[in-house]
Image 1 (cartoon, helix red, strand yellow):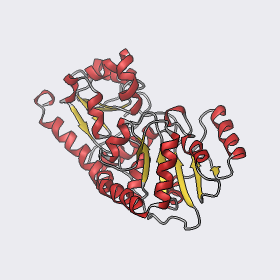
Image 2 (tube, helix red, strand yellow; image 1 turned 30 degrees about the horizontal axis):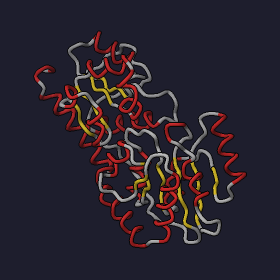
Image 3 (spheres, one colour; image 1 turned 90 degrees about the horizontal axis):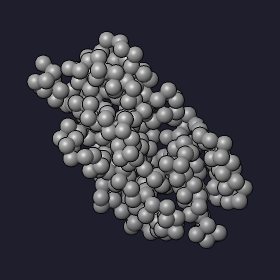
Image 4 (tube, helix red, strand yellow; image 1 turned 180 degrees about the vertical axis):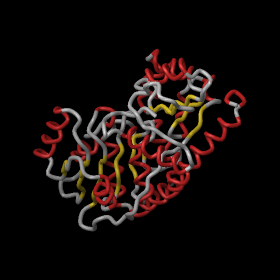
Length: 315
């Protein structure tokens, strides 16, 4: 199961979570960054393009063995459209996994029948208990361009200065430029705090203390932070991009047009001031909660392996 060597990578967390599920189902699992040719009956690759070397090698050395490729956001919404390696990985895979229901739409039609949707999950032990003083907005995730990380703080300029609304941002800056921009925003916007990277348990507690989570991503394969918010009960305001809609559902009421910070600002104010609308956000996120349960993710992996075992090619 190749995974990013970066311990902060969402793919790496997914790899280790899946490894735990598969071990509990009685399988022996090794999590590696590159598959070096060791004995394996099946390969589950996370990220078509970045794991291509392992995918190609496994197919070449084990042509009759099952090869599963899990597609990330950059795979679905960029790489499979312009990377020969990612496109070839789709061809080589005997099964594909997407992490939300709209991901299948991005695939060429010949590959859709071998694709399964497995939502990521979150095990949480905190409940939604927002602070009562100010309406607090959380932005959670490492600071990188694909996340459009400063859209929420940019939206603050469209709010009245006396509005009791604040934004807290959690996540490491992955480039010096991102760190400088976050520092700049703190200097010019007193209602914004960038708190950097925190331990996962602390991040969940802080998110549980916020009224809403903003997910402003440009592209998403299936944001794990949405899973966490749903399991905690934190309403989400999200950019209307395919990956977010695939996680939250087409009828979810909390979408804004990508990069439209004035629309985002109006949604934040509405959530803060309109209890009926806020209740609809709460109800909408609750309706998705079961999708992101660890038991559901484990069943998805188990069913995928059963499908492979029934496939005559692998008997």
